[in-house]
Length: 269
Image (cartoon, rainbow, N blue to C red; front, side, top):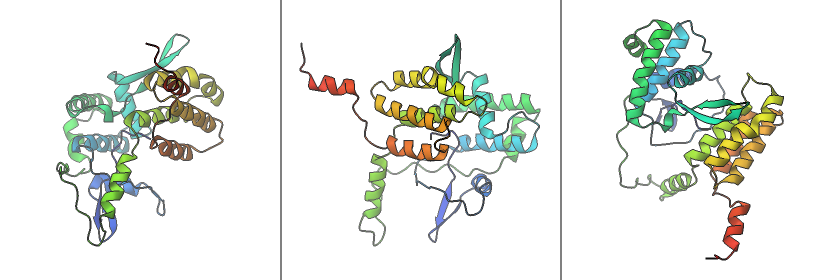
């Protein structure tokens, strides 16, 4: 699912992956030995300041008394405070608001959010932002821009590596679909609400909003809604639901019944 938190930055050496910076090393250590991880190589890492933001949140949770359980809880609280939210519908006249993804912000917008977030953390913890920044684990330097020329095939690969990379990129899910998955699963796994309430309000809160946002991709929204219901009922695990929906998101968009009818009817004009 679409996630604000930056991916682990790894370095390839002798056919093995190792953390590229202290921040990634700390995050990797949080996983139990023997954990199987699904890794998708990418060449467009988040900026150092974005990684720094999450490193500072981790430092705050580890050393300060706060009401947050996770860095994601802290980030969402900051987003809500500064109005960085999406409207997901209304229940009984009350608007349902979801924190936006920081990945949706341009670099100038994130720079502004970062400065606001540091002030918020200072008020919440009493610790100066400069101190937080200096004590946070190193997040490494930004990667240089990718070359416009196509990558050369590895020795003895016969160009297979480049072909596979191109195929993977073509099959990548669109950001809108990724955000749709995230919202449905966020709603389905919310531990603060009862299953009965979630089943009753899944349509008017989440689905209604995404039917409007993805009006040309209704079959996919329907699939997300059905899968979310299965998660709420305990029929499937959230991880399995996420894997299924991500695989579905990578496929070409299906035509809805309305699209098919429009395509089959002659233009009356």
